[in-house]
Image (cartoon, rainbow, N blue to C red):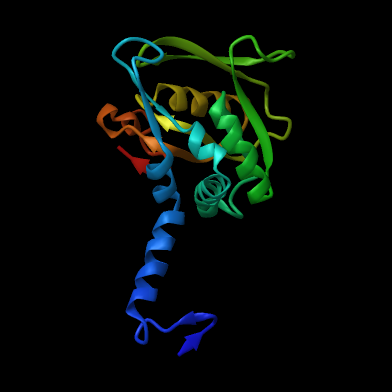
Length: 197
């Protein structure tokens, strides 16, 4: 017996299994696991770089990860902050999907006006982030990046955003490298990851 264009699962168990499999394949985690690639010794020897470029290049995957990252914050954010560089991709898409503005959190030396700056340590060196002061202080911000590794980049982004005048309400990443315990660098923060490896 058909129901809304589908066979009832009691009438056709294999159709129900196929729908379940299709749902898993189109889930955000399923898409990331299907498309994620790993590049050894990049950017330096001993680092296993997790490349999400194929995930972003797939229209279905990009849509479902964007939806999953922004959904818990709908109605709770005014802007989405993207950490350079892959965080820009996520933040732009999430801002559009969530009806929010976009704020870029840049690497040092990329912004033309006076900036606030925050230094941090990476698993393979040190770096700085910069951003402009909030044009509308007190706006609620969701910060997005592609990967949470040691947590240094995102912790610096949170400190910087708050110094700039934003209220950080959440942090989202596509991939969390659990063995590096980056969440420990973000105590008391609402952190969501799509996949943890």
